[in-house]
Length: 316
Image 1 (cartoon, rainbow, N blue to C red):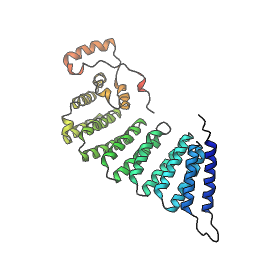
Image 2: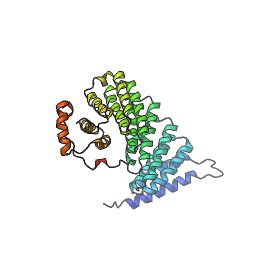
Image 3: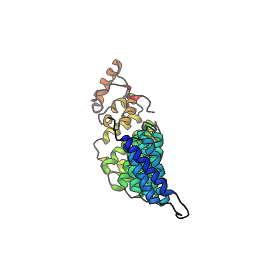
Image 4: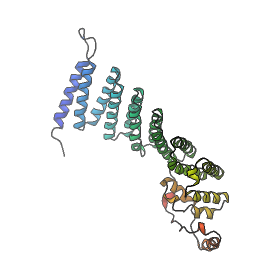
């Protein structure tokens, strides 16, 4: 519904801007600009523009406000102004500019020693840019993780590195994903969060299998059994070992059956999409072969084959 007060708010904003400009002027009797008063007037004008839904005017004035706050030495409030500019850019559907201003806000928080605020900002904004440009989302998650590390917030850092890893995984960069998951493993080990380590180890093993390196996958598995008693005793460990055995035998039918265990179908969706590429359609001939195999190894034959769908399209 149209707000009849919009025109009044716009006029009010313009008056605040004019007054702010006066405070910035110098003369023979006024050698220095009155930054505090100008900042106050521009801040009021920004509020009026935002209420009147004049997002571009609010954005531009927010940037000017931030520059004055930097000049005054108020990096925290300058960061807030850049946040406001980013929000106004989003309202104008200019997401590229919004990302740039959010990043500037994060940098100012960091420079001013407000690393917590920077980490929160980057983490909050990262998901907003996944559809526009996944590299922006990844960059924000990584910056948030590093800031959390600097504040000795190991658990938060582990969570953020994992989120970054999942985004990188979707780009198909398995080596970088593996590198970040190794960092997550290290952080969780420090915290003795073994409940989460089990799942991260599974992802690292699967990444090696996706990369046709079953030897490396087996090495991760063996090392985990040695280092983490909780992994060795984990009930899902046997499913992972059986899958690795199938890869060791290079038996595609066996791989197909063993990767269809319900556990593997309930993990991170993007991992499931790649796992489904190992599943082979069942034919009549295969059914006869499976009956023979079933008599030898009933432990691997109780899972109903999953109907293949369109999920195995290229992830990128």
